[in-house]
Length: 312
Image (cartoon, rainbow, N blue to C red; front, side, top):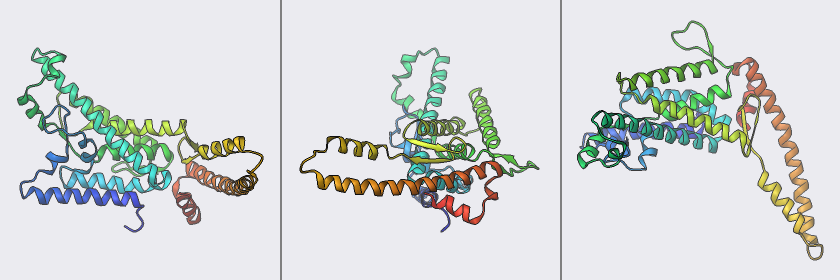
């Protein structure tokens, strides 16, 4: 546990504690799933905060185990690559996005059901109290949407990393592993839509991957610079700092501002030294990431692994 990064470790602990609380309080008649699970938005028991809390609830030990195993297996590496703050943002965005996609999927199911009974779209938004109570059965729980987002991030960040997947006899690259998983979920979602329901929120899984992909693309196009293969490294640019310095020098007076100019010069020199060190550090990290891309993570030396993880 001491070697697991902070955010990943805390997510594991929170999920396990929520499951234990659900089990213990359930014996006393308190239904945690009904309170914190994600209900359909027109259901009587729906609350907006369930879009956040549902991802910490699970339907059983098996459900919890596989989600936490995947989080432990891939989350630590992605956290070390993205950094703590960006990792928790990414995790929550994927989880909430998965919940929104599941809500949309359920809305389509409800509309199809009432349309078969001769109702219109307008009738869908004017349900009776009995209908709203019946919709409470549509409840989604689990961290799967956020975990699938992490799987996508792993495939985009380390696409050439080879993985052994049981029962395949040969290793496959991470990018094919992720694409394969997405294809299976897409096929399963279509199967559920035809009526072969398996009780799994496949649309939520795909939603987590979709929102993860969109967030990574957004980071690439805005205030973040990416190096290596489309997303190996995410680093903030000091745009605000540079803009502030330029505006400060532009509007500074020539008279009683000599002391400020002296301080600004000192700061600029210090900032230049810092940026020079950062550029050297980034070049070394880029070299290591290029090595990962070409030869895989296992090809790194212990010193290179330490540099990569300590870079955040």
